[in-house]
Image (tube, rainbow, N blue to C red):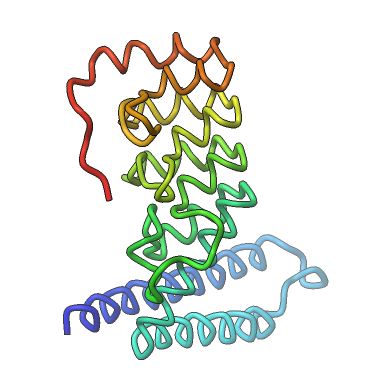
Length: 215
């Protein structure tokens, strides 16, 4: 019932935005027609015909979200993942605005995600998409959510991605968790022969008093 109410509210907002957008287009066309000579005026009927299908598409999309919420959440997961993998900040913003989880786990309803990455943060880190990574973390994504044997921070270190290391640590990545055999992130960087990353990690390592609990 809670999911149904949530999507009904979402559908109502989506419909309201579509109607407002359609009306705004109509008003702008009327203003333009008032300023243009008759030969260059835009036929209003064409804009009405454009707005009608656009509004219908939004209604169908919203209705699909209401009657098939599980399919809708999976769609959100897949589309957001593709945008994170491709480094498309605009698409990521759009899908987040439509309700996608910045982590991804909350959207995928079929068990383990069927991608090579455990979270959107890990996908953006592995692909070096720093703007997407920054956006996800600003939207509340877990900086420590990765595969069983590593974390996004570990992935950034393995790839010698200093910028991703900075972004992840600045947003709460745990420098003590997930590096095997009791190693912390700085020791892992040294073992990977990336000594230039250790100074980036040490201040956060000093401030961290104990390993965090992550799944």
